[in-house]
Length: 431
Image (cartoon, rainbow, N blue to C red; front, top):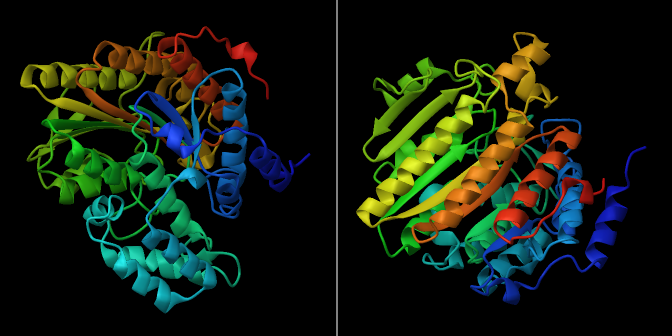
């Protein structure tokens, strides 16, 4: 029986699930879970998500799962409605709601260039592209959606949702941020791609770099089964002078179907091999490690070599930072579509058919792999807080409901046990 999502959104709104923005801004808040507000989730209706669910349905299911965690833990829960933005932004959103294109674009021009949200945003996306999103959001008001292609569909609130999601992270000082919202890692500087419209990871990276009072190394580990193509392009084209290490774990046989040969053409240079069929390209201070799951596969019953490689690179980065008196910022654009139990075509459709169970076991991750990955990341954080500025854990993909609900529970259990010192059990959570 199909669930009544709109009714659930109203019930969710009535429950006191979130903590006020003022209390979140306390430095004592070490970690926080960030989710879209019920109204923003409703406004994602018809936006594609890669599986049977649209973005609204998928995120409602995820928030429902997070709600179960919230009943058992003091983890703060922040929604996109609890963001206090400057009046210029609020006026812009009102103009978009009124459908006044000229007024909206004029108000956008009035936002100060040094605004805490706009400044890093413009370092990643040109002004003309942001104005296109504003215009498309207004044009969506007629039919309720504006379809640019099969993957990119905007609703009347899309621009507001994107800005408030970024703002909720930038204005929240928690060192660990677990963010659930629209995907971002495929977005290029001047165009959306693969359900992604703005590249939030890179916007946050720019903000973190600008606000760090020590030398900073940004470490990115993308575990979505689809390559971080937009993110890699932006980093290569516009951020290669920043110290960045990007470990991109993907399967080149699925979207966007970009293998080592393609990546070589992007960088216009040869890669060096670092073992286990993993290649590294370097452009100035930007290191890009391509971990192709069609080549780097499971060889034994132990942890898959791809997350092990990523963990080793994170540890190596921490050692280097301590030696050089620098800080680490860790960005984790996470996709649970790399799990062997994923069923969505965008993660499993290869050569005209879905990947077999045996092939999935070799080229995808299981519960044990991901639990170990979560555990080690949190251990590194606990043991090296002095040199870790922040960790941003952002959702990118993962479409099978039972699978992603289980991973949310597993991740939150790890946070409770390792960071909050609470002994929780997966059986404590209900569907």
